[in-house]
Image 1 (cartoon, one colour):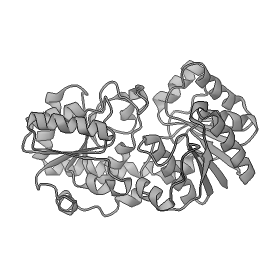
Image 2 (cartoon, helix red, strand yellow):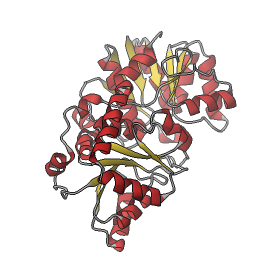
Image 3 (cartoon, one colour):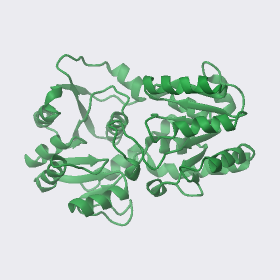
Image 4 (cartoon, helix red, strand yellow):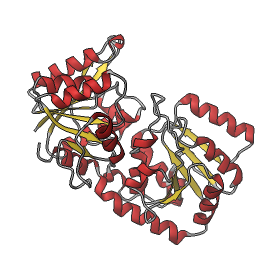
Length: 385
């Protein structure tokens, strides 16, 4: 099948949506389809080499990328129109996008279209575009990342509700959590070996880690407080925008913390080595979680780091948010109250003293994540199309 994918924002970038789109493009190509990706580029911008994209996003498979002009003041409407025309001119059998403007137009023109949604559409235009997609002759599937989102879309906008389980969802609406590239997590070294292999080499002591953005609600302040209490443990924080990393670095210096390491942004291709260097991996989400846009996404989270952590085979400590229980449970993670720092400190200390428990939790997580590969996700989304 010839699949045209329209990325919603510029690439390369550090926004999670760009990583998700690139991983899905690779998975669709790896499952035997002919894939082309379109990405917006400002009128004064320049295209980026494939080598740079592959390194940035940790890609193995090669697929063509076409750069389509986008005038910032037109808020992606011009780019959405160009993307649909581009897909039609290429002779695509299927149009796949997270951009509502493009999904609505493609469906209206009768092009077979899959529209992926990661948040509840709001305002006046967002719901209108979603309805135009659903009512168009080209609508084939609406993909949502969590059951919580599917239920809210059904309640608020009357979107068809999928079946009772991920495996049974074969109608218009499909629940498909994010995924992981398991190939990149094969044969990872043990934490001690991984720490020795990083540059600069990490201290050889028990290490807990966090990878990803450091936006409000991701628990960065909690991590620093935990580091203040647990001085014999290394806290490795990987990722974050420069301004946020700089702010946290200043807080670390002011508090005199010597057990906190902030790396800043790490290329996706290198990320598994940093995760492998940790004995325990943390997801201290708060009850409100900011996205890159600033909106609260706590109700619909399907973080890619969750599946990466599981694939890494390390014990996971996670905030006990309802949406995360769609994947996590007490057998594959330790689920804790988001704002109870005393409990987090106790559990980290307990895990540091209990290797067998860490290994048991990590092994179960690794078994469970086998159902959440990007390739399995791609095959499920295309089933019946």
